[in-house]
Image 1 (cartoon, rainbow, N blue to C red):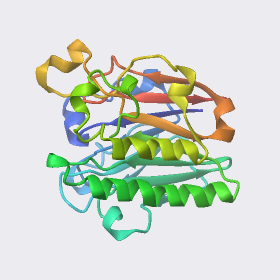
Image 2: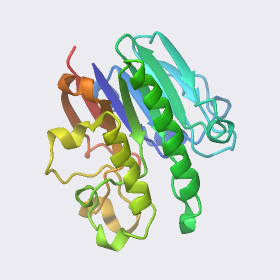
Image 3: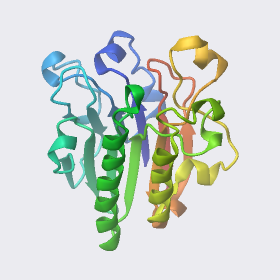
Length: 254
């Protein structure tokens, strides 16, 4: 099974760039999109279709902001939008799919915002979701979390760690939440397979950062410990354009 995540930074923008052309070549079973910045009323029915997938959208109530969409070839046992926590759910950040042997969460974690003003909201989101994961793990369930975590975990995960120590995305109080997830029964699948690899998944549009590969690894797969032996590979598709993020694929052994 192959799962591919991508922060599209605007579904309509990606459509204008014809930036979904890579999908048949990568051929994922599940596509997890973040920051769709649109509702289904803002695009045509045809534009929402990605063959041969069925899609679920969870847009934010605020127009042109946040939102997630998940597309899949084979229907899951069930799906759910949000956490059931209103002040998170209005931003359309979560889609859960239930498969026979794991829950898959497509999540657009909050950004700390200009002047780090939304960092408290971001940390509250991390905490609330970890409680949900703890409950599922306590019931013997396995979990795959993917999406844009909006946090680079370690210095190896961004090109300029020292210059960003006071910036959201690399604040100590943000990074410690990745530690906590790893302490609560998760593995960072990419880092488990590639402990010394310096690869990034996001580059600012400024300063020719992508061409110079001055980026951050913000897009992750956290998998339950019991699932790690099924992880065959994690592939960062750095050559796929269309957003300030690139897609990342998790390949699971059947």
